[in-house]
Image (cartoon, rainbow over the protein chains, first blue to last red):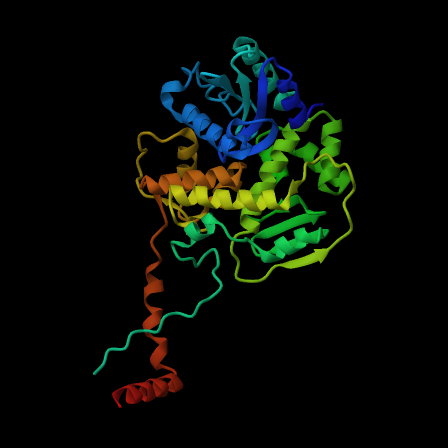
Length: 134
Length: 278
């Protein structure tokens, strides 16, 4: 059964992947890091990812319309993913569904030239789903 | 007659409960957390460092595990949420006898993924380390122990990384609301009505703030991690929705009574007054 590092290494096999990390968005702690990060500082990048993830997760404007109140637990993160693009890359943040208080978010940095955002989004979603729930 | 001001209090080793408000800022900017821990990491000691707020299990310059009465352990985090049935956890814990063995049994039984275990373990470790490395009034003790089994299922973290993260968390909390006392005092909501703009997580904290529970108590009652609770508490206090209960009225009376009762103190005061009058 894969651990954090195996999941991040799998993410790094996506075309154009430059860095991947698992970040706790409630504290900004990097739970796992593989590859390179903007500015060369994975810890600073994790703190920035946590800021962005927290904003997205807590603002009611971005929350899904509740489909009845039944079963809306921690397994359903308030947001699926956040995508940031700039001139030379994409940043993909994927919330990890978990039955316990995980606060985990997968962060993937893709190079713009060889990255495939659509493919990466699908694959990262699958990886996040498998990470904790199996 | 000259008015004598009370002498400045003697410098005392600060505790989590008696801290100057600006303490957090100084701590947040750097400085060692525990010289003993730094020394133990340098000599790559193996054993348990027991401090006032918790214990760190060390081996070869790494933190294997941390425990604190103020932070829910990995078992609480997994069972309270229903991720692992409590019965399964205790059966595995009883059979294995230690944490790595318990983890291995649960993995083998397919109760959780390796990543879930790693995430939970790291959360429990950093949560407990935050309290274990909090300023304490008494020195820590170290018990040397046998080396742990190699190749356990739980990730270990370098001591330096734990120290850095504890300082970073302290600074993060300090930025939200600069009062480290809030980590350990009873909390009470100030506004009885639900305030707008409160997240589900924050209203859960408010619902449990009854004037008796502290932030760690609230986290334990929820079976959730304590650090996010500390964050929500500071944010709620900053928003004016949460505070500490007023001290009981009885606490105000005693200080005036004792000084004059003791004849020695009364005599010393007369001597002091006489000396000042010269």
